[in-house]
Length: 228
Image 1 (tube, rainbow, N blue to C red):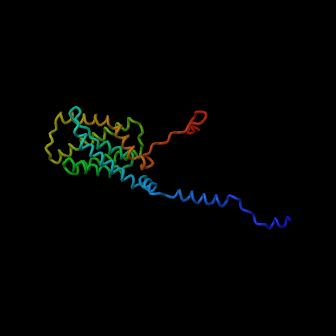
Image 2: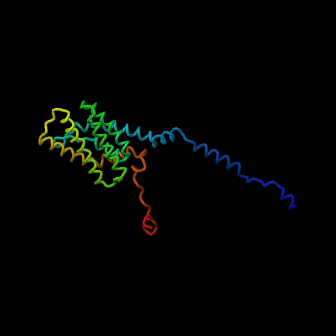
Image 3: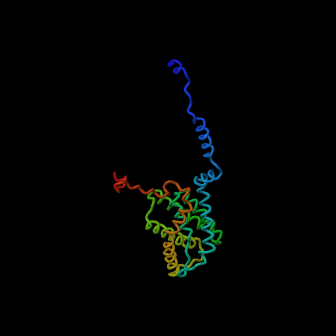
């Protein structure tokens, strides 16, 4: 009897075939669908390019149709250096410089200005902000505010200086200096919300250094695991 049991084939469990079919069905359900493929594409490098193009278009339209029509203390805010600086910090120097060039070219064409000045200045702003983001990854609100003020001051002052060197009739006066200071202060107040909105628009496709750092999970004793 034991000899027969020794040569007898081992029987499969009763539910083995059913479980295998269930696994095959589950594997088929987990295959990528068009919506999932689109989500993966939007989270990759080309998705970042598409998001930057959309942010540039919305920013330029808002600046042209809305923000430039609203005057506060005799000056209007300028969203373009703030958005370019935010994109540079979040995406890096190369993406920031390319983004700044595209935004500046669109602004010069839309406002019928001297072609190339805004592109040059915003390219420098995007590259500089990207270098700051790559080396320091600023997270403090005060750092973003200072960065927005510096980007605005460079954009406004640089534009006037280049026009003066090109021989454009730009009178240098106390009113011009006051307008530059007012625009810088006004943009500084908008730096934090503009940065938050820009990060919100780009969050799904940001590089690793531009993503918010995860918060440490507290242990049962209330001490962070980073302290061990």
